[in-house]
Amino acid sequence: MPKGSLDRWIYCRHDNDAPLLDWSTRCKIITQVAKGLSCLHEECTKRIAHLDVKPQNILLDDNFDAKLSDFGLCKLIDRDMSQVVTRMRGTPGYLAPEWLTSQITEKADIYSFGVVVMEIISGRKNLDTSQSEESIHLITLLEEKVNSDRLVVLIDNNSNDMQAHKQDVIQMMMMLAD
Image 1: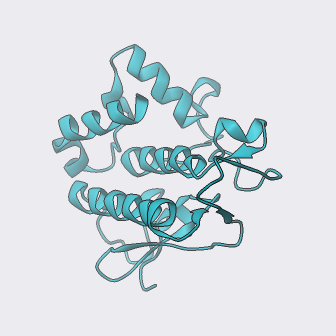
Image 2 (image 1 turned 90 degrees about the vertical axis):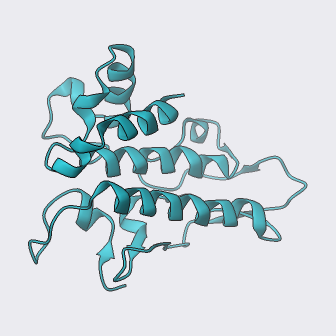
């Protein structure tokens, strides 16, 4: 895919010094990934749990249309099964809490998707060891900022466009926090 993976566009400046992704492009990517997951979970003969949803596995074409990639860890789930038992697989920081029981549904992808959405919004990695100890985990930080009504500090501060749309961005973060 011409634009490479999403992580190249949300964590840092890219090779050609192109502008950061604006809010509408970020929303488009979020929507397309959500539709892709919906297709895997609801429209296939067997439900497909991707099990490794992360920015590195979201590829972008020239128009910033997003496509899920890397199905190497996916698991097929029969429609008559509520869950599958499997060994832990995926990337730390994106694993849903239910991995602790090894009883997985396609909903594990939804947790990972929420983490990716927060990375898209904030422009930072979910696990960022360059941050202070209390800010290393983006999801923990989201929970803290929701409780203190300070979500605005999580918005990508390198993007004036994101700051200009902060009310919409905060609304999306509130949905993630629920």
